[in-house]
Image 1 (tube, rainbow, N blue to C red):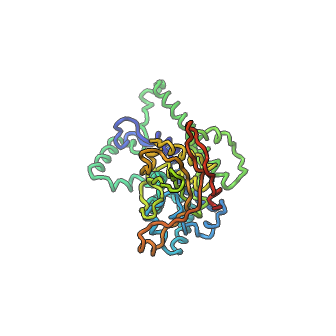
Image 2 (image 1 turned 90 degrees about the vertical axis):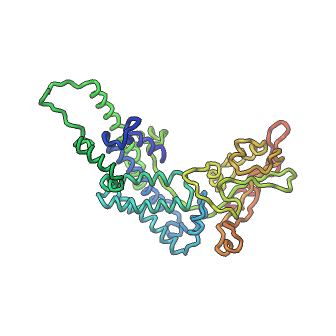
Image 3 (image 1 turned 180 degrees about the vertical axis):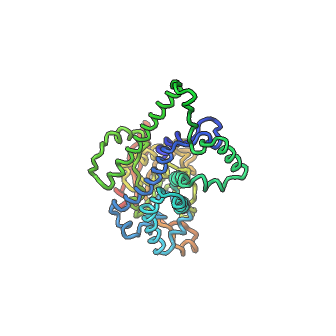
Length: 405
């Protein structure tokens, strides 16, 4: 998502170190369309995969019953929304499908339809940002939605002196406001040869047209395949562009996560008493309030949430973290908020698995806790460091899969 939007934006921004508002160099309409096309696909394809996945929670509109607590990195606002009545979650799931599958088509309608679409999706994105930490993803989609607003609408929010400056520039440059260069006077010198600069401009325009057409084609093919598996369109252009990740297919929340599991790393010197390594961002201490820190994305905490949905054999990050903690690796320890073994590394390190739920309203009032949790077992083998610097397994894992505690 970021690579596609970033690449296209290279051709949207005006050139020069101080281009001002770019009024002398209007944006390429093809680029603006492709960015809006990306915005549309992020929403619409996400709506399609929700139905195509066969996830019953989207079909019976219960997908948001536990959404706020089971996402990668929840927020305290999500805790409050989680406790709203079921009718609210059913209505939210239905509204999500309506917005992603129907309302986003307003982006291709004229005038006020686009403006209305902007305010609807912006309000929705603000709620998502407030209730879950999805890094830069929602901010990027939020910014792309600005393309739904035309200059006439945005102009009224500019300072008066800027508006006067724009009016003067538009009056002075005439057609430049519409992105049209002044037409050459062919009568004055009809035999004027094409200069080298003109030739380069023509070649550049042709190359850009070819690139933009290629990107559009590479996004249309998978879009069409969502509805027609055997669509008779050449796939080679899509395959050739795939390594660059600038023409993608999207589909968010196709299947909802039904449980929340958390991996915790513990160190011990005697094998009887253990100390947990405190995380910076992901849930651990049941009394700690979930925070809001997006668009920053803590990759370590984020990836551990995904690892908890599978086995440690599928996620090398877990045993590798154990090894680094056994030697008090500084870079590894910086990913935690503290080190329970500051003087010397522990003799043993293990990864355990917990299941988490948001606390109830009564638990929050009486115990001042945001979470409750249940111990499930040892997620990954307990490791120790041998005298030669290698690592050995002391105890094997007793949780083969988080879904089979």
